[in-house]
Length: 172
Image (cartoon, rainbow, N blue to C red; front, side):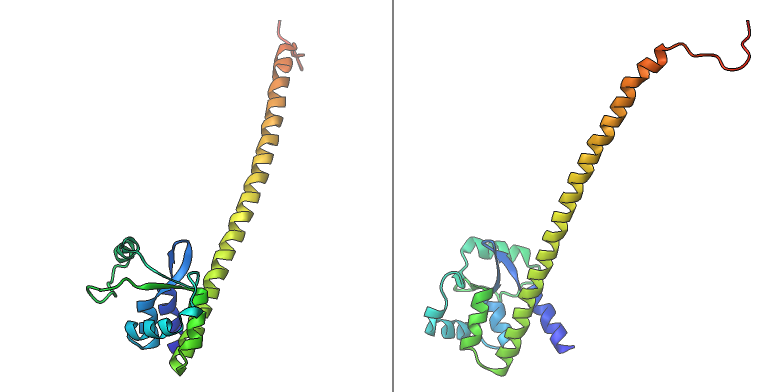
């Protein structure tokens, strides 16, 4: 049950920023059970492990946008510095500098959440592709059906113009 709760918490803390799925330093610190300042000190001592595609500092505008999206404020009031965003690779790299048992369990849960998210997105892409293919087939068949109706309409004047032969007894 504890792992299930952790997985749900982790999944809620993954955001899409700059076209990348990321987790914020403030949320990661809370999950790891350390102060954000402590987390970032560990990162800064190992800065060569965190290139800009692993971690980046949020702009003021990005922070404002996130605050407006998150109904429950977990920002802890006024902040002196903007939080950092860690990509999946950045979170994986955190496991090499944070070595507590809790950090290991949290990292496993985070990696599973990223994988699950990737699988969900992949399933949606496959579904979208299948729907597009179906739409193409329907459009093709719609065209064929329209052609059949048009051919029938083209034959109709010929049928109407021909005198109908009376079948049965004719009254004079």
